[in-house]
Length: 298
Image (cartoon, rainbow, N blue to C red; front, side, top):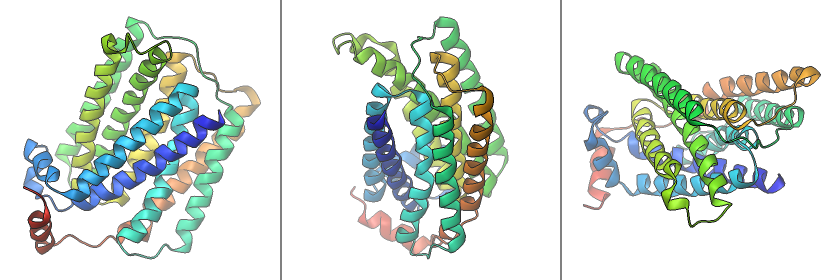
């Protein structure tokens, strides 16, 4: 369990680096490239974005390693730590001061996360979902993502970024579900892994979620995207772990401190979403975009 926790924290840190670097690159992309293949082509020419993808791959590998020894209900909530990591890094990258309210938010979020995990004491499940479980969960996830995207297309500005952040969070949560099944199969040997359908479904879901994330980061600042993404992913993943894999969290009187921990997490996330550190990222200018394009390899 301790190894799984350490690997999950490393995954959260790597994901934070990825978010900041990708936002730095994506905000320079022209608005008319939203939801077009040209957006990815434009980003591929930006070294910062490629660095963010490298960090994202690192986070993916840390997360996969964590899921080999821990369940979704343990590993995924720890990824909430990505939010304060992102804020701390954004403060350096965007050259803004971290105010005292942000430190209070970090403390609340950390205390909530620790309290929830201590009270819930999540245990890995030993159940493998059947065809019906996969069909229902995949359909429900796809439907929820489609609704978020449809609402985002009708909205603009920060609401669009938030809705796309939620959609990306749901996508990454289901990617983690598929990752859990794949890593479970891998513990029995790697020979049958290439024939596992979950491996290819995981890659497809991850790429689709990455595409949603790029559009979210292009649509608005980190202050809009990151809280929606960071909170949606672990909450949905924990629900998937309990419902699909039979993972166990304590109930009865323990529900009270669990709810208190969740409340602190939500409170800390809300405070961070209003952080001047993330709101203060320097606005993108056309000159910056031209310079970034000239620096990008062709």
